[in-house]
Length: 173
View (cartoon, rainbow, N blue to C red):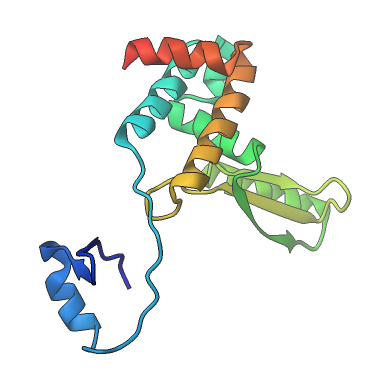
């Protein structure tokens, strides 16, 4: 079921013309449905976020540039660090050597994910993936909170305040 945009007429919710055929296919006249509030994310906020990330990335040391070859790598690392991630069940291997081999192979295949051997049980491999910040995956409130958390983590890496970073990125956009 995809989201449908409506307009309040004063007595009824009417779908925008672009959604009318979808509504005619999906709904039966007279049926009852819940209407949920949806907040569009601001393109300006989205663009500012990526400008800030690029600003941080461009100021990384050579050592950190090796760890984060693109701004996207930095963003995903910050998402995981800030807790905006999902974790797969641990894979329990037959021995620590097998766990190390699996962690190594998975890390090469999925370099933006955090894949590691559990220190408390060296047979267990953990896999953490950054949550998607796409429009479909995150609403306005979650996106704003994740954006703030990511920028705070990233600003720590280069030793600047988030406020200073946002001012500089604001001049760049």
